[in-house]
Image (cartoon, rainbow, N blue to C red):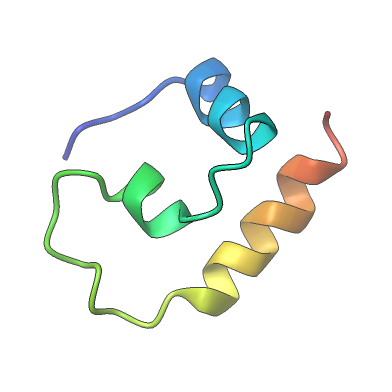
Length: 50
């Protein structure tokens, strides 16, 4: 798995990248998984830190 830093992750969110599956699992074949609930909780969690 390709790891990204918190700064890169939050920077991508700030610039409007909303596909968290691609951000978190960039080099993995998990894009078919339904992670919308996980994505929503990540968004809520990180949104309050901006």
